[in-house]
Amino acid sequence: MILPFHPGRLPHATQFYIDGAWVEPLAPRLLDVIDPATEAPCTAIALGSAGDVDRAVAAARRAFATWSVSTRAERLDVFERILTVYRRRMDDMAAAISLEMGAPLPMARDAQAWAGMAHLEETARALRDFTFDQQADGMMITREPVGVVGLITPWNWPMNQIACKVGPALAAGCTMVLKPSEVAPLSGLLFAEILDEAGVPPGVFNLVNGDGPGVGEAIARHPDIEMVSFTGSTRAGTIVARLAADTVKRVHQELGGKSPNIILPDADFADAVRRGVAGCFGNSGQSCDAPTRMLVPAARMDEAMALAAQAAAGFVVGPPDGADTRLGPVVSQVQFDKIQRLIQTGIDEGAVLVAGGTGRPEGLPVGYYVRPTVFGRVTPDMTIAREEIFGPVLSIVAYDDVEQAIAIANDTQYGLAAYVQGGDLAQARAVARRLRAGNVNINGAPWTVAAPFGGYKQSGNGRECGEYGLTDFLEIKAILGYGPDA
Image 1 (cartoon, rainbow, N blue to C red):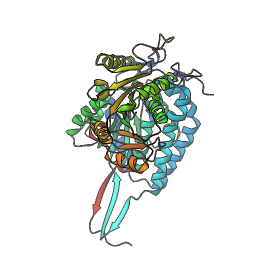
Image 2: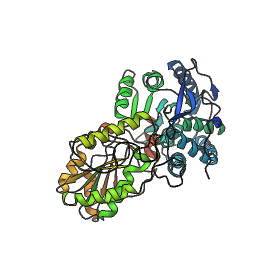
Image 3: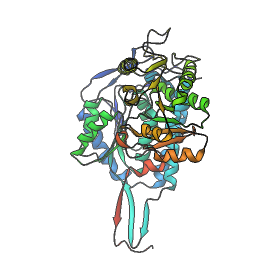
Image 4: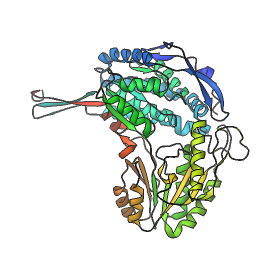
């Protein structure tokens, strides 16, 4: 049983972790952390400034001199110590995530907190086998850490995104400054406690809480940061890229998505629709790779709407600690208002509302709870088919033939993920190859932390997870005249 998380178990909520110690902010300024299930503050954190970022970067710069030349064995030893502490504190992590962003407790442990552990395990595996040096034709081709890196992470999968940035940065030999989301910062603070207890050398990992203008932008423009890895909205990602351009630093982005889910004519239709609804609604719709556009043969639109409405009715919305809860609240008033506006836009533009709608579910007058919503007969030009909603809202779009389905799927500014359901595996594979997305899932294949994750187009650049994530934190150096193997 996971006990409710009390913020008092985070004694450093109003401090930052810099150079191996918990320190006070230079100019104390507090921000309430809102519990989305109650709409009330559950604690407060300190908001940092450019001066706090300067302190953290200076510590990371000093630590880089030694951490960058640490051995594979030394880094693996640090990973093992981190994982030992993380596993022991898994229930704390799950409870903290549930409190800060509203995930139902079982999902917070078995998906959210688990993902952080799994990424660390996979990165350690990649580090054990990774080839840093290759000799050829008298040259040494070596891969070295890129330097001090800035890591800016979101609130929707907080530990997934922290671990798949911090892990490869550590494995590569980089030192870092992390800014977790100020909306859901408790898991980041707990993660810093874990790394501190695990004995990560001072200055290698630093955490400064804050908002985008105060801390995120300071990280992006800082002249002593060589790389920024950012996960968030496409709008915020463009700001980071512009600020980083003046110092020509590497920018690695994982941004928004509007992922298509093509149900081919020969798919097990009922099963594909049900799984599509579940994929869209998972994490209360707050996943950048959620299959939010379901593409179905035009002749089966009515059937798809009926099946999707039936599936939506099975999603119990309620408090994160509720025994039957499948969907908790969305994270904030800002998100709730945006989702409500877009649902109303779908109605106004003529989509057929077959489940859900505006307003809170019955019996939940307080909390940022959204009714699981399904629209049918959505056309590709409608707002709900083009904008990322980031809530439990599914749009069902008709296609006349497979060529048109592929065209509709690719007709988006995004390219993070796509999904294909079909009985003929050869056809599903052929369709998957033509979809312009960084990840394509065929027939509900289980997700794995070993798969590279990242997007095409305005969904970003770079890849995370396993050896692919490790590679993105490395520079390539050619040493000519190195000579033959000894």
